[in-house]
Length: 405
Image (cartoon, rainbow, N blue to C red; front, top):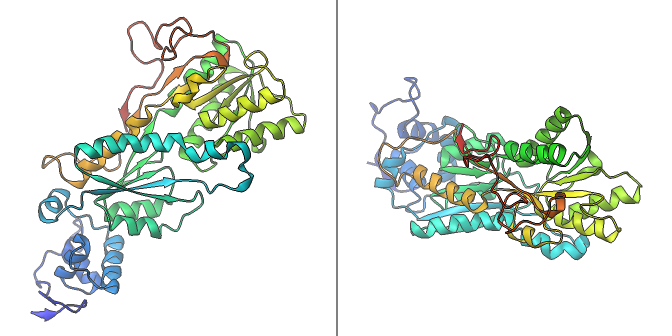
């Protein structure tokens, strides 16, 4: 027996311990202890969060874990470690400024991430888990607060793009991680909606069903994977349809109502011609676009059609009611939690490791008055004639069926 670096009596590493890294195998706890210069017991206490190891010990162990890519076996961890029954959730929230004006309350509401969190909450209750929610600013990228949160929870769910790819991979080696509306990495899982399929349905409806020959896109956060995918799909599909496409710096929003208002006011103040149809990065942006057009006496949909993305509940109650691409918002949160729960290792032993997967949930176009369709029999109906979206057999219209990549 000898005194470990954290000042407690620990057993030394066995000289014949399995040298995982040296043998070309996945690194083991022996490799982590050797790289950090501490005992196996010290490594175990840091990884299990027990007996409050010294800060310098914790830092050395976590650095070794990150550098070696050590991943504790999930099933063994569930049996040997007392789970905290807490999942950390990181939400990307903008810092509101006094200049937000009339849409400050709307932007602070953030219905989309709040509805996702509600989906997580419902599943967490079934498993007797608690959610520990932390918000980060749009441009916060150092990751220290997120890595600290990982030590307080059994796993993490991250909204949107809150860490650089290298940081995300490193975090996934230290704890189970699921991202929402981001991109998968070799150590994490991503859950998202079928942005491409939803945009395809919308562009086809605007250009073929209504015959609009010019379309604009009020974009969301420039670095948001959802926005990047939607913008790329808009560019490709409008080119294929042979219609005029309005986009670029003048059309840059930020997924907020205030951002949508800023784009339209800027275009009109510079006497920029508006396209026949405007697609908005999300419904909150579309709410402000509808307001701005009405304030300037521009009729919707008579002069300019307006569409959104998300189909948050208020969309169907606007006047005119908002045509939008529906995402299964709560299901995104529920799926993310179910996936993370499996990664934590509390499901059946031998379950397939989902890391690296891109789980895609279907989207569906909801046609309403703002695009030029007539009022439907029910706000839940997809087509103006009351028939549901999709072909007669009931399969999804377009490439929006759930899939895993």
